[in-house]
Each structure stands twice: as C-alpha cells, then as structure tokens.
Length: 551
Image (cartoon, rainbow, N blue to C red):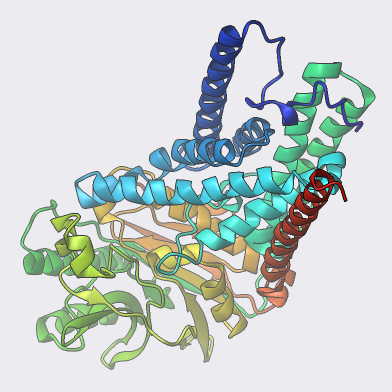
C-alpha cells in the first residue's frame, strides 16, 4: 500500500482528518477548532462503537471499526491531543461498559473513578502511538505502523491488567470475540494474540479508510481490505477440540437466587443457603438416582461458614446426602479482622475436605486499600466492613468421584478471577481437567456484568480446551463446551438448575505451553519501540542544535 505524499497525509494535520485549504488566520483558527471538535466526537463514537462488541450487544465486528476510528484521529503530531482523544475514546468505551459498578455501589463515584482510570490508560496508548509514529521507520512503512499500533495496544492492556492494585483487565478486546472466527486463536496465543490481531485488523482498516478518501478504490486499498478480511476469517478454520480425554463428569449446578436486597445480612445469608439446598433437592427429583457425580453451588452460596456454624453445616450436609454427591460451594472464612473467600469441597456425611481460596480479591469491592485516605473522598468505602485477604495456592481442587474411581482436579477462579490470564492458566497446568467459575452477581442488578463474565468464561474454555461451568447465585449461569460454545444457560434473578455431562480433558494448548512468554515478548517489543523513538528524538535534537550552532 503506497504512502501518500506529505502534503495530504492526515498524519501531518492537527485534526487527524482530511485537511482542507485554510482561509484567513481567524477563519483558519475557527476551522482548526472545529476540526478538533469533530475529532473528539469521532473518538467518543469509536469508544461507544467498540463497547457494542461486548455483551449485551456482542456485535464483535464493531471492535475493529471502533478502534479504527480511534486510530484515524490519532494521525496527528501532538502528544497532548493524542492523550485527550484516546482518553475520550476510553470514556466512550468504559462508561457504558462498567455501568454495573454504579449499580453495585449505589452512587456514581466508584463507577466514574474506575472508568476514568481505565480511560487514562487508553490515553497513555494515544500518547505512545503519536510518539512512536515520529520515528521515520514507522512513519514511512504502513505495515510497521500497523504492527506497532497493535503491540502498543496489547502492552497497555497488559498494564491495565496489572496496575494499580493488581489491575483490572475488563474490556480486553479478546473478550469481545467469543462469537467471532477470531476465537480460533485463543488456544494458540490466548488473549494476547487475539487482542493483537483485533487491533491489527483495525489498523489496516484505518489505513484503508484514510487512503481511500484520498485516492479512491486503488489496488492498494483493495489489497488492504482483503488482508483485513483474511485476518478476521482465517482463524475460524482452526479446529477447537471438544472430545473427552479422561472421562465424562455428570454435574448439577444450582442457581438458588437471593431474597430482596436490603434484608438483614445474617438472615439473608441463611435464606440464600436454604435456596441452594432447596434447588439441589429439586434437581435431584428430576434426575435419575445416583446420576450426579458432583453438585456445584456459586460463590456466597453459604456466606455463613458451615465449618464453624452447626445450622449451616446441617443444611449443606443434608443437601449433599440428598444428592448422593459432593458439593462445591462458596463461603466466607473469618480470622480476626480479616476474611477469606473460599470455594469449599463438602463430602456427604464427612464434611469439609478441601478448599480453594480466592487469589485476587477485588480492590474497593472486597477490600479497601489505603482506607483512611479514600474515606476522605467518600464514606462508601466503609460499605466493605471487613477486608478480604488473598489466598496463596492456585492449585485445582481434587474432588473424589466414586463412579470414576479417582479424584478429578478442578480448576477454580472465583468471580472476577476469570478475567486474569495467569490465574486460570496456572491451575490448568497444575492438572485441572474442568474449569468452574463460581460467582455472586446479586449486587449488579440487571446490568451486563454477568454476561461480560460469561464471555470471559467462554474465552477461557477455548483458550485452555476445557469445559467451563459458570455458576452464579442469581445468573447468568452456563455450561460451556471446550470450544467456547454455550450448551445451556440460565436467566438473571431466577432460581434454576443445570444438569450436564461435561468432558474431562488433560491435554494443554499451545497458549498454555507458551505461558507468559508471548505477553512478555509483546511488552518487550513495546519497550523497544518506545526506546527507539527516544533515541531517534535525542539524535534529532542534537543534529538540530549542531545546525543552529553552525557546526
């Protein structure tokens, strides 16, 4: 694809849009201000369009178009404008995407702060793109520009997933592609590769849009369109394995639902526990005797710990004996002024046998960092009365299955942990043959938070080649095949049960085997791009200074 002459290249214009002839100085300033306003509107539209690629719309193709619009308005040479436009794009993406945070807290400060923080990260992407494009090698080679943009975006996604306070990888572009052919790349390179290709497609589209406005449908434009289509469709040709490798597990999952919000905490916790026990008995009545190998309850199914409370113990054990199978259930474990979020294995007439403790508690949701400081900003921090502490062992839970004559290792990621690449991968590599995502979505109302989690669970299924069961207190719960397809799901705020035979698998995907190395490689490439630009900038300044000094 040829590079247009510098006299018409949008890179050199302040607005990032096609330049027009300037008039008088006053009219030129007015025109420039109007162009900047249009660029901000395009950036905001790009963010809003990108958000529709995620649940609930799930229009996955919009991810390419939305990011392409952002890249069009970043064809400028102003660092400040690059940050502002990318930040506005980020607000367009995150404000609607994270609306559930307002629902959970009941006041907008948390939603606005979280959205602004994530948009700020996207703003950093805008700065890096504008800066790196100052390098002659990037500026003069369309293919290198596209690759550089994709590398920088993915590096910022990685940064968002790590900082601050352990990161927040929501709205990772890969999670928008669970209905797209691009899902075929999940077992090859995980979210890093899928997000990279999504942005690469968007960068090619941005080039095509820019050049076609200047030159019309030339051979280069048509080649760019063909390349974008090939990048989108080709991954769909890759096979996704679904067959059982180590047997089949007969699983029942119980979505018990919750009472009306606002009830006294202890009485509500006991009511939720009773709901799940009743749901288990109802499920058993409609299945054949001894059909179930394992029953799954969600996170917070028994926030009163059955290991220490006799009434809770009697309810849980009664349900396990009625099912004739062990139960995995979510509970809270308190130790002094701290608490742990456990997913507990309960065996009939035996009791607690093993547990997994959440590795990544949610800041401002399950614990408050720097509580005294943030209390000055809002008293809402004290809605979290007891801080949660992270567990130390990501190993799968070994569940004895009598019918199979062995213990089945089950990978668990509690609630938001499904968003973190390393946590699920470590447990799968430790032997997990099935992935279970217990979650409690009761605080998020009728928002799309639960279906956003479901998209992540679907991605993890394809990424690791494992069946996944997402089980929620209020929905959405689902059984997901190892290729990411949804076998069965529930609705929000209903009592329901799922019964399924799920394949157990032991092989690891290329993504599992690569581990963090692909992500590290992309981050290193981003660092090299930024370092190379710094060197080029310093050399240019020295050369300019020498010319001024007459040397």
